Each structure stands twice: as C-alpha cells, then as structure tokens.
Amino acid sequence: MKTSHPLARRLAGWLGALLLAAASAGPAGARGIGTLNTEYPVALSVQIDPATITDDDLREIRASGFELVRFGVRPPLKSVNPTLIDYPKLIQRVRKARLDAIVTLFGGKEIWGHEPGDLRDGGSRESLFADFASDFIKAHSADVAVWEIWNEPDHKTFLRPDLVPEFGAASSALCSRLAQRQIRPDIIVGFGFAKLPFVGGSNGKVPPELEDAFVSAARSDCLTDISIHPYRSVPETALADYEKLRVQLDRRQLNKTGIVASEWGYASYMPVRNQGAQASLIFREYLINAAAGIRLLNLYSWRDRGDSYFSKEDNFGLKSKTGEKKEAYSALTEFLKIARHSQKVSYQDAGGASRLVLRRGQSLLHVVWTQGGEKTVSVPANGAKKCTRVDFFPRMREGSCGSRSGDGFTVGASSSPVLLSISD
Image 1 (tube, rainbow, N blue to C red):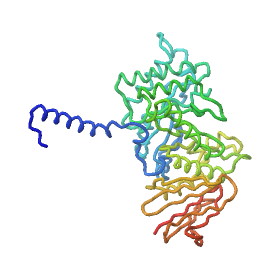
Image 2: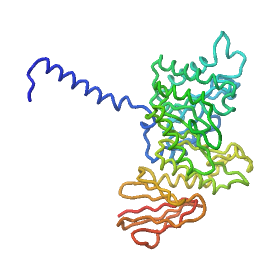
Image 3: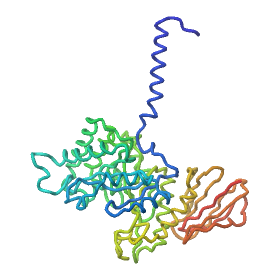
Image 4: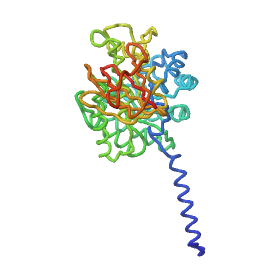
C-alpha cells in the first residue's frame, strides 16, 4: 500500500536510513579472530627469534605456506630486552616478506621491568606497562595483524607468582588507556595462558585472578579473543579441552570470544623423541586444530635454540640451529601445498582412528591417522572415479589408493598421517 502521509513518509525514511546504517556498519565493525584472512583451513604462524631472524628466513617462511610469524616485544630496558631489538624495523621486514605479525607485548616478570628507576616519580608497574603497550599498539596498528597481551602470566618465568594479584590492575590500566585513546585493534588476544584457563587439567590450574582479569577485559571489548598454549603429549586430547573451554567461555557470556592457539610445538630431543616422531605430532597438531575449527595456530618454533641433542628447549625448531630442515618441516609444508584453498567438511574419531575431510574445489581430501599402532580405515568414494594417495613420511610420495573395497578404499592408518584425494 502506498503511504502518502508526510509523517509516515518521514518515519519510513528514518527507518530505512537506520537499517542501511546498521547493514553497512556490521561488517566494518567486525572484530576478532574470525576476521583474519587465510588461504588455509587454519592460518599458520611460526615463532621467530627477533635477534637472529634473517630476511632469507622470512622469505622462506612465507614460501613454505606460513602466513604469519609471532615474536615478543618487551620494554626498552636492558634488564628484559638486553639486545634492545629494533622492533619497528623488524615489523617492516616482516611486512616486506609478505607476512603478517602476531606481536606479543609483555614486560619483565615484575610486570614492567627490573631496573631501580622503573618506578621513579611515584609511578606504578601497571601504568608503566599500560603506557608502553598502548604507545606501541598505536604506533604500529596498521602493520600488525594480531596483538597479544602478555605471554604465560601463569608461569613464574613471565610473572612473579606474588604479583599475580596485581596483574588485573595492569590489564585494566591498559584497557582504560586503549579506550581513552580510541585504539581498537581488529584482533587483540590475551593472555597466552600456559595452562588451560577455567577448566584446569593435568598441568595445573590458572590462578583465578588471571581468569578474572581476562573475563573483565573481554567483557569490556578490550580483548577480542583468548589465547592459550595447549602443550600436551598427544594432540588429539586438545579436542575435548577446546570444547570444555568453549563451554566455560559461553557460561561467562563470552560467546563472541574466539580461541587462538598462540604457541604449541614438539621438540625432537633424545632419547625421548626423534625427528620422525616430532614430525608426526606437529602434523597431527595442525590437523586437530583444523578439526576443532581453531582459526589460528602458532608453531613453536622456526629454528632450534641450541645444538644439544638431549635438551628439550634446544630442539623445538622446524629447522636445526644451523638451518637443516627437519622431517616436520618437509611433511607440513608439503601438506600445506595440497591443503591451500581447502575447508573442513567433517572430522570423526572411530575407535582411535581419526579422519579429517577437507574440500578443495571438486576434490575431497581425506586425511587419516591414529595415535599409535595401525588400524584399518575405510574411506568412502561416493561414486568418485579418481583417487590419489599421498604419503608424507619420511618424505612425500604419491601413488595409487589401491583396490576399491565396496564403495570406497581401505587404508592402513598409523601415527603418520596419510592423505587420499578423491575426485570425479
């Protein structure tokens, strides 16, 4: 029915304008990890050492399928930043290599630093950290994809246990400073928990003061997402923990808060784990994050820290300290070439045999594996005519899927994932 009354026409016009404004503001105002652009089922980052990373390393990281790199930024104090890294220059080098950055901002284990003059003029640890972090975010907001506030505050290496009660004040001070200065990064996560917050687990519980600090920051729209470090003996157990964490976030009215795995890796150190076992675990770590719908995973790390075969901390790298590629590097990067532009279709765990299905164009990519030992897995063909099998261990090779078994193919699955690409 045509409206002719002037007031009705004005009301209709106002309503239309409001609807148009809401529609246009929706996508533009979107924040959080869901806005991160990626060509893969899970955006993949790798930890780098700001003091030793070279431009050749950065170019190789990008060419290998990684889209981001993660590194920490500390205050310009020799006590916590001995080499006084030129972080602005590093950020530009990362951008030049066509990589995005995850920048983790944190002070010393005393929140700000250790030098006697840090608290001069009656300043507080909290306000000093807020000034440092907000200044850095404002200066580099156009060149950093993901901001992370702190790294493992529930670990004594990064925050003195007796200062845990003060961490909430530091977080609140930063959030207030960001709000005052109207700094609203698209993706800002925290706090890089070493243990699983709100849920607990075999490696202990997060202090409630840190959990409360996160909830407060997330509810105030200061933090967009939660970042955790899900280290564990086998990757598959992360699925249940992700689900538990999701439930706990929702119970706290943090339904829009996404989950980021901002640090997770496996070391190849003797006699615990050789390079083949490291490769299998890292590969499965990526697959489990894809299965869980986790948007961003950062691997620890690009290069070994040392050269002792028996030191765990020396051997987390995808490459040795001198630059030799480990089996994990080869398996993962070859898989990324295949998985590019694919999306998750389904995941199932049947009797300890896992199967992740990805779709890439007209092809279905079935990745099958176990946590140990061999199991026979049936992969449905659904009438498709073509099937290619890809093995990644100890090196990549392609071959036949073998004879059909009913309306599918039978695969001997092991702890080393195998891929079947099925298409018409």
